[in-house]
Amino acid sequence: MRRTLEEVILAGGRVPPDDIRDARRSMQFFGGSLLTQLVRLDVLSEDEAGALLAEWLDLPYVPWRTLKNVPAAALALLDGTTAGKRRVVPFLLDNEGLHVATGRPDHDVFLGELSQRLGRPVVAHAALEDRIDLALQRHYGLRPQSRSAVRPATSGAAPDLDLESVPGSFATPAARSESGTGPALGLDGLPLDSDVTAEMVGTSALNLLFDSGAEPEAATDRTPALAGLDLPERLREMASASDRTTLGEAALDIACGIGARRALLFAIQKDRLAFWAAAGQGVDADRIPAAGLSALGPSILASGARSAEPVVAPLTLPANADLCAALGGSPPALGLVVPIRLRDRTVAVLYLDGGAGSVAPPAVAVFADLAAKVTLALEILLLRRKILS
Image (cartoon, rainbow, N blue to C red; front, side, top):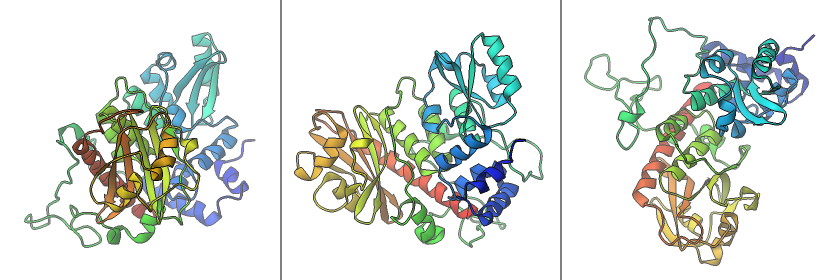
């Protein structure tokens, strides 16, 4: 007899019963699976949750970094209607057959029928449900399933967010007060359209993202497929990201889609720059020291961490040696570092260049606007974590 998912989680000894209870309370309000809530509450990392799901389903785990970039040959074997109905995502076609991701324990019959119809084996892998939803949206244009346990009192679907109509940056709409003369106040007594500050979200929320006391999320190193890059869709991913890794990946996809050949993100942790994510030609995250890079001294990254404005500087100084080693190839003549700021505090830096041996840096104004969008996405993520905490 198959154990319940909760039994598998508790058996590992990684999650105390109190955290399980908190996650179940969160499920009652927000919906979603137990593992998804444990990740959102920062009890488990995404890979830890995936490993527990894989153990429960007795399947190998497939992470988001694999589901994110799927070859067209695999997608062509399963139509969007079936993929959405069954909540499965094909992600690889090789000599073993068609590999598909699922988060459910009841797909044996369907996968057997699919194998018979395709005339080839179908190999199942375990993936977290929110990643299944995101992959279905990314590859098939399907909206995520609503799993909220709270139903609105009025009927009818909520209107879609129209990000394409927002010129240049995200806008925060002003809600009206009861008198109709000003913005409405939130539960904290502040206007709903006011800026998010560290004081509003609390220092503990900022610690979850960037301070050295927090458990760092897994760094990512990818070269995005730029052909046909859907920039509005990446903006949606960044705005709706439930974790820092997803947010960073979407931001770097956008960076490489609008002019940068190489892009890196670093989070500031006291006097260190902790590697966050990387994308582009020849960038190898394994070449970045595990302890991160120094936020002190004359390097271009340290200068960006101290600055409130974008920094353009040569990479020929010895202080940039670690960065150049991570980038690989001949260093560009100039690099660009744009600070990511929450209110009056720089919490991360975005590095960009035109590729190995390039002369001109990427356009400053374009990437300053991207940095502003990353800041807004971080504010949304902080508020989401504040709600769930």
